[in-house]
Length: 450
Image (cartoon, rainbow, N blue to C red; front, side, top):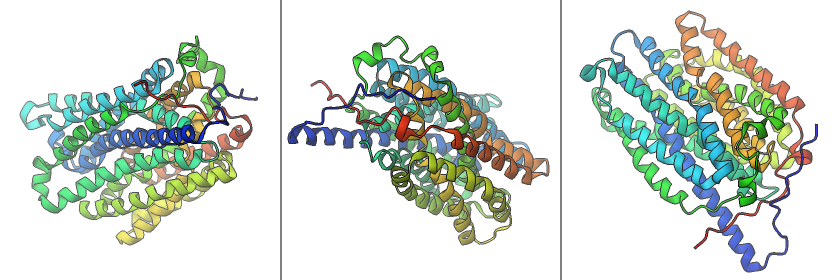
């Protein structure tokens, strides 16, 4: 099957020096503006996961630590269930009304969700209404993040120059991981100044207040972004529709297969890993937080390196390497981490796992965006990613804790390996974007009207 080449936006190669410099400035600012909003989105979303160790007992006061974490993980997973809705809603908006408007709207919604979590009363104050309101806030955030991935992946892929898309597109995950890192770093700083009782009483609210304030700043930054779609594309009959998307069934199945294994192992080695080090390996909260802070920092720095590698040897080879290596190493790595006692050993083991995951995450958005034409690109990436992510990524913590509670924690390791094997098979049969992709030429980005 050959994917039609999208060349409608191929800019003129005969730009003057001043025009070329202006174009370069717009592209650099587009990457900065798009990725900064992405950082805030993911900070807000992951602040919940990292702070859950402290507020779980405030919303679910009965039961042991595992059951309390299981309840908060369930609500964390419920946020993922809204991602397909967010992917559809914001993908449709981005394809029909433009990327910029869609990104601004997603940021505004995330701000509201974070502020809601920050001021929520606890179970002791309003009873069962507390976890219900927490669920509502997470659903709001889930819609926002579900849209954010697709539109930011699409936008950053479109503004990047041909031959450097892997490197520049990797900044989506630089900022995504940076959002996680910032969330765990804020928690780490709070731990240095507040006692554990203070953290459980009110300290856990601080990260959500910071997130809401940062979202306002990012919203104003996104107002100045240039648009990557034309009026003709946005007015097309198939723009942002499922009918248009279903003309690219192979691309949809490819994105779904990659996301199933990629997001599952990503969340296993990032958000769930902090709980795993505490609940299984027996580390203290402070030690686990410090370890994951260092791990996430190194992982963030890996993304441009692996993104640049994909520019040299192709996206398909990167995805094949990811699928094969992750299938082989995930079980022995998780088994070793269950027995680890030294934080330095844990740091090295987790970093090795995430180096393999980087083969996928560094080009995650780009490899998907290259499969779809302009008119359904944001919808194709956002909705398909959101669906697979909701099923497999969002359930990662819940499934892991469920297996642990059932006394078969090792079964979770094999579950992750199986999904990675599926991603490997999908990679073997994916089309080569260098020959058939929709982003083989630079896309002209329109200056904003004064």
